[in-house]
Image 1 (cartoon, rainbow, N blue to C red):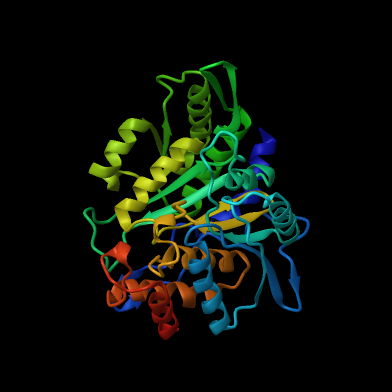
Image 2 (spheres, rainbow, N blue to C red):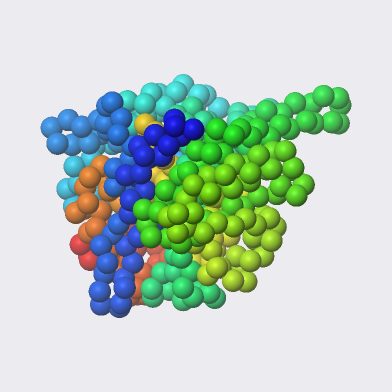
Length: 385
């Protein structure tokens, strides 16, 4: 138990200002961009830095990944951000990328910080397992955080949405343990451990505590998976007892009911914590509530490594190469990374500029009901800088 408490204290700086993503408080006032990055857990060797310049691993990914990461590089160059990229064009679609993937992993271990697009995962049974999952498991990047918050200037069906999705990143149905026990019969193992359930629960409550949030909801399916999800739920409840004195409420909700409640009354949610698969589904619903996958940034945090990527993990192959992708989610994920590196000034400038573009409503990509191209959105962000 003490080990978990020590881990919680180590991780606390990473949570300090995570939920307050830079959004205009009023049409003419922009709040500082305070996103998850204000110091991830202290480690023996920090992010690689030479001569005042940080070295960051960049994996553009598949689909629209190259286009939206190019936007980030263009903005960083224009603002003279002290970041040098180690780029690896890994692809989940082509065979023979295994060696390049291993090089990218070594780069991440060396630099401690990475920015990535989404790597395509083939469905065919003979293909490789997800490299997105492999990164999180091998580096033990155990906590995924996505903030779903109403964007001023972009009206959606629901107003005043503001909740955080915290997803366990390394086990559950994503363990990748499945086999055919008999022709036509497949057994797929869902792995749940008390240690990781406690770790992610503490992360969620610490996040709530550090960000002035009032309630943590555990999402589960323990009524059916009584042992697997039952372990997750019961561990959550035990951790919740320790935070009662801090004034943080806790409750739990079955995942199917959660989906209905999200689309009918999302304002009831504050912080949500859940196993891996449910987090994937709920984060997609949350993104749709506030503007779509092109607007929601995300990050993955472990004890030693931090990996930043759009919060809604879509390759978007259907618009690949059309210059139509919304780069906002990737740009905002990059500002979260800058804050992690201590480059708050540049993070503020870029994030505030992105939100101003959305607030003005003059430049909008197709996913937000406009006709602007990726490069036009990027140029509008640069113009605000």
